Length: 486
Image 1 (cartoon, rainbow, N blue to C red):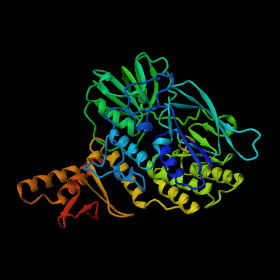
Image 2 (image 1 turned 180 degrees about the vertical axis):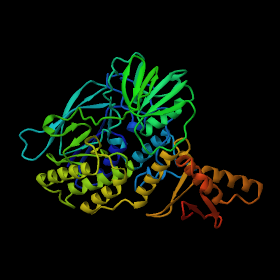
Image 3 (image 1 turned 90 degrees about the vertical axis):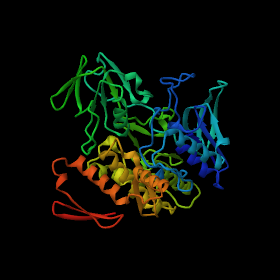
Image 4 (image 1 turned 60 degrees about the horizontal axis):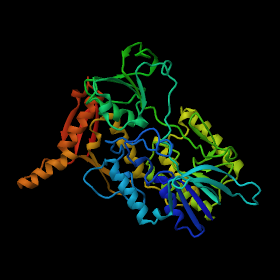
């Protein structure tokens, strides 16, 4: 079997890693249009277009740190190296991916600066084959090559989603998308309207408060309990723009200099011919069985489509799932059966409040999704603790956007984890240096718990009653309910 992998980001590297040790696979090409591996984890100050006239792929900004702890960002067989902090800068994750590729012999199979122009089923073939046309950006030579399987791993954080806000095109100030954001200096002294309350929107809004006159953060995330700097104001969705004035759905208005769109990205597969039978509409990629398999052409798969997940672990599981279908370990359902499953899943998700645009959003559903891939294919499951840490850190993000990256996680076993804050380690280092006893960890835990309760319930948090049980454990009496925490 000859396999083409599109993209040398984390998903593509993971696909190649497993394909290269699969006996049924005879040849693997990883086609990457840039000069280095890493995909979205590569930082460049260049925005817009590269030297070959192609859109810059990466959306990485200079200060980015992971929004998930490193303990759930590794691959099942290749964890992120131990370090004091759980939330790492992008350069560390890029170095991690480079190490992963080198260890598994992937790098030598990557064709750098090779731009995929077209993928389509081969006409007249007795079995399903694929013609892949790509251009060597250095030589300018275009080539078409035949493959048995296609792994689409081009990521989905590179094509900006521009919302339809009335008056946006006529806005008299500056408009930009977070895809082109690198450093905050460009906003110095300005009034900036940040549209979007996802992880990047919250992060960037907080970062640019250091240089702006004012930040107006427009979003519809209901669970945010964070306290923001005094020059940041939260607003509901933008109703319209008129001149330099933003009008919000609560009837208020603000004068702004910049509209900064942190509105996410769209799935985009410009190289897929229409005969591949993949449609992207309202950010729903269909039809995909298990969010992986092209229903109409099962020798094509997509790795990494779901979001709000433990990405690298999910990539690994998706690849193992699909490779086991390639080598005959298990048989995929028929196209009709896969289509029926896809339609039933859409109906189920709609009944639970998911919009079409959220067709691939997992979040709390990710654990069940991982189990379904494992059970059907018979491959090793992901430990439940991965999902537990993801969900815990996601809530901490909402509770304390400014400080959640000070949390340090440690996975105990497949189901359990503990976490603490860096201040605990600071106390311990002082105690060690002075040869005295450290502050009990329960002190830090109570401080953290009370801070969260302060943010979530300013009026009533002082009615909580705490009692220390031992150096690690305490109890809370709140609204007549007793909780024991450790």
